[in-house]
Length: 160
View 1: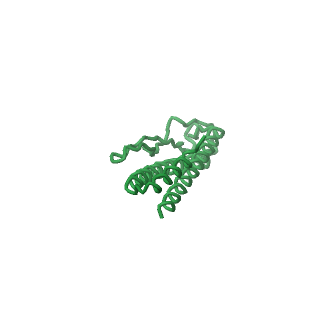
View 2: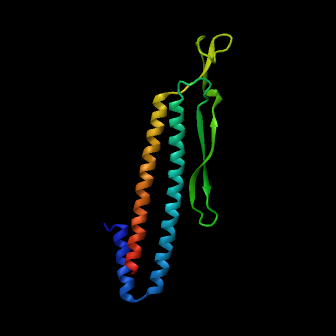
View 3: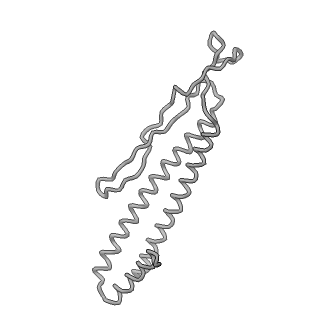
């Protein structure tokens, strides 16, 4: 089975041997634009994952902090009107006041009259899993970005 990169090189060699340079430029120009779109989409994904990682680490760091409301991220898809490319973005970061629990600790400085303190209700295991997933997603996006960069460089080298 022939890989897509080998197919591209085969197409390029056939086009060069036929002397059809205008067709070559049209094909590579489109592929470069496609690779640039892919890189923009991957950049958006990396930005969103960095926010996910930051919010999860803030939640972990403040797991035992009184009156800290855990944060949640709302994601949205965004579509580029020019290229029609769809990517991900952070819509908002909200504090989830429903994720609070009353803990009895009359010695705490923030305790109410009944001796209860509002503490975040977080599952550290789930938060760690979210951090790990964000890290893996970011690594995949970085590898894909590097692959598209390499493909763009090879295309330019072949044109020279």
